[in-house]
Length: 77
Image 1 (cartoon, rainbow, N blue to C red):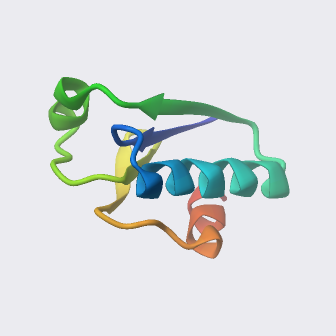
Image 2: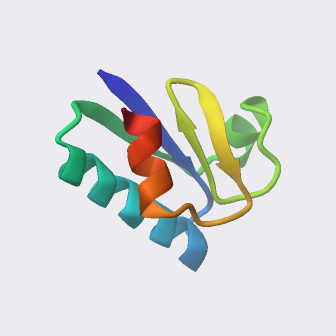
């Protein structure tokens, strides 16, 4: 199972990122655990200081911008 974390306080870009990630999970059919991380202290512990950010299995994939769905799909495979 893939663990996907979307980090951000809930701003428009963070919400868009979460939507794109959830759509990618659905489209690929990958078994994934989705988590939205909004606690700034936890986000900082992961080494992220600009949001939105996405981590897959603990590896940061993108920081500070909304990912393209095609990129998220590639990360999930």
